Length: 264
Image (cartoon, rainbow, N blue to C red):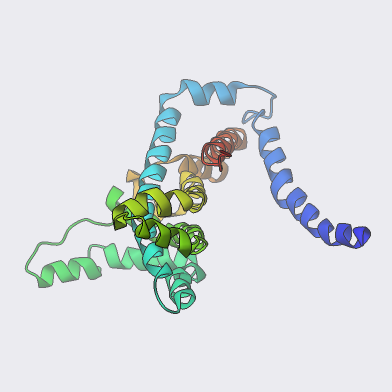
């Protein structure tokens, strides 16, 4: 029986080794080489000494934090409502349905909606208002990124809320607690694990967005993901691109540690 379990565990180990550990090791290895192939620490020195890279880091963290906050403020009430509906699994499936659509297709769809001659400006002109430059702005980038990330925030929060024993909620109300007190003292604390998972699922990918920054944010939104793309595809400075990748990986590990479940 033990051999059989080990046999089925082998594909998982191969997947982790080939598609997780090996790429991370390669990125770490390449980060110690400059553009001429010499072994050096100059890439790390350049990153921490150059204000441009530090500004990109701050921008990445700021945008990721805003996107995470927006998705949380929308997702938590939505998940709370879904848990109280009939056929809640069906409604949940409809909410996460957009994740089945290719990300590039969604980005191009929003380019058409937010474009100068797109649907939003057509509606503004119909209302007698002048068209606005909506595409290639901070607002459009945060809006589209939040829309795309919402299902990844809703799902863990919904599961956490759905697992709460209804007897605890009923006991709170029987003891005279108001709806707000029941929410703050019972529901929200018991759903924190779902919130933590949702924050990880949204904040970490948002740190390294690059396609949306190009298509939706244009040149106004510059993040570390954009810098990595530039170094790998344009300047061919793989060492610097790998260095930024290592910085992102370390940042993601820190976020995972900060948001992990705490034992009481």
